[in-house]
Length: 114
Length: 114
Image (cartoon, rainbow over all chains, first blue to last red; front, side):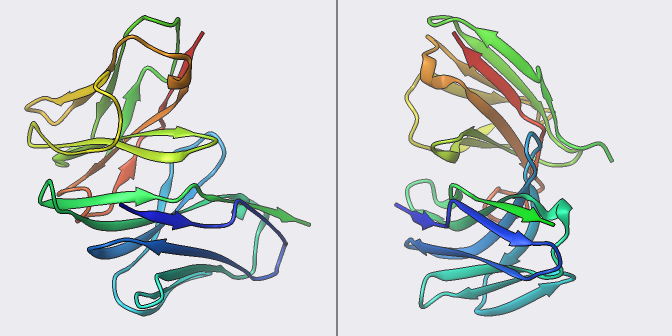
């Protein structure tokens, strides 16, 4: 099975930097996704890591350490519109089905304040 | 290119009834996955269909079922509804199998069971 942990809520100030952590325990790990979900809307893809290291995409960066079962999403120059839930999702191999399965954490609700 | 669409967007049912939700994937996408999202449990995987075959199944009772048609459109059915089935039901489509490719989510169907 899988166990994915991320903080329930975080608050940060507009213009600041915030780091949202995600730890996981799983077998057959094959990648980690971050999704953003605004209230009342569908999740949208932010980033994907399969190898150790940092992936940068504009104001957003995502880091992965497979040996530590750890990832973080870094948001720079925070804007009010970044207030949303951030979902960490781990892809691993479903040995029974012979395919991959995506398992989501419960999400971190980020509030950006002026 | 049109995104993932789900119908209906909102639904109110009473305990014991059954419900059918529909999902139309992005054109060309062959995989459709279904998720249940609740405040307490987050996003939980229900099942995935690829080329009309169920490829993966989460830990939900047999009351939850689904199918996929030759045009990749998918339906999920919940029989003998319980209060705890009240949730946002999201479907997501991807070009290949869900674990291998980025998933695109629909807006969801908000189901309320009274």
